[in-house]
Amino acid sequence: MRYADWSFEGPDGLRHTESALWLGKSGPRLLILPAPFDDGHRLRRLTAEVMRRLAASGITCILPDLPGLGESPFPLDQASPALWRAAMGELAQQIGAQAIFALRGGALASPEDLTGWHYAPVTGASILRQLIRVRIIAAREAGLEEKQDALLAEGRERGLELAGYRLGPAMIAGLESATAPTKDISTIGQDLVGGPPLWLRAEPGENPQQADALAAILAIALRESVTP
Image (cartoon, rainbow, N blue to C red; front, side, top):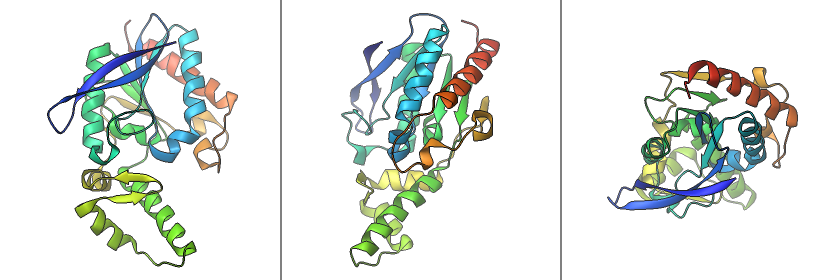
């Protein structure tokens, strides 16, 4: 396991340096796109366990944070789905990635022209609705009444604080229309993995059987579709 720096061009035209976790030393290189926001917290352990299993089978896994999330130093209020996709495209080129594996909303960051797999992908609109729902419920508990349409209008103009995340106007507008690419992409549904989805748990958890299933699916498919 090691960390290595990489960089991407931000909306300000400057290069921004990030760090990515590498597991594995040889074989095909698989770029892992983590789930954003709260899904990322709930799937963090699963993501790490899948990477460990793939590395043990001879596949190198590279896991970055999406700019603005996790340990990324990039300001979240300047990020957007379009920026995520462009940044991941740059990273894929820099590391020589041969395929991608995206979890949930991480599929929105999938770069073009790479084969890959999306695990239970969701649209940006679905992510945004969930974040707004959390804010509305919290406001109601505090005795306040907020409406989704009004919040969206404010978000498109000035950005919003949602579920502890400060999202800028570009993120709000981008999530409203963002969908995952489908060209050369295979979808892994929860029915293939088995068991209840970890992102539906109230707290982060793990499931070794699900990690085994995902790693097996990816290892077999990757070796069939990618030449090392």
